[in-house]
Length: 298
Image (cartoon, rainbow, N blue to C red):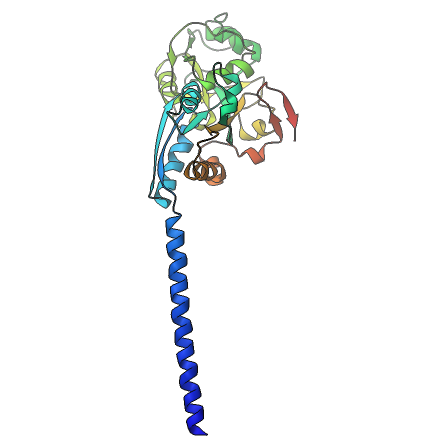
């Protein structure tokens, strides 16, 4: 009887050992399979400078988690982003405007991904005493009808209007929703949001406009309210502050890779970075807006 028990114990131990070995081989095989599915590829994501800070930070984090993916982030403006992704030079085209708003772009050939919302605000040199303008005053300043701050309750100082280049999505949105599509006065322009902040901060009496994501980058500039409404995230979410847009990341409809799609999802779902860098999650909006500017409540 003792011999039978001993044999049974030995046999049971052997079976457990074999099962363990089998389990180890299975796990190793699964691990190898997962490894073979690791994301890889090279991505150029360029265009909107309003979206650039978020994409830049996200790319660094994404590449750390996916070392076989190489992402290059460029600016150049929304027009460049749309044009280059349509041409195939960029894998991702970053834009503050819908592709339908850009002349010469076949919007059916590229796929839209709304990753965030951003507000745009008029900014002035921080030494300017004016904190609020009516919409009509704002239009009159940017069209050259008002040329001195004393005309809107400020000190006797010349107003220097600093515009954005024609390919800027920030300009398209500001002209549309802040200036009622009025034509800006001819003057100095900048093609990058960071350069605008620097120039306004260095120019007494200057006024321009940037995305909310650039409002905290310099104490030399300050944002201006319009008709008593402050440029805040909460006011954008309800459309009380009407100067805002979706931030789009377009990809080629037929050639988009898994790495590109995963990166875009990473940008869209990085809620901590969205808030920290001055963006608003699309899911937090209380309204929708289409490519023609029509707003509907959710």
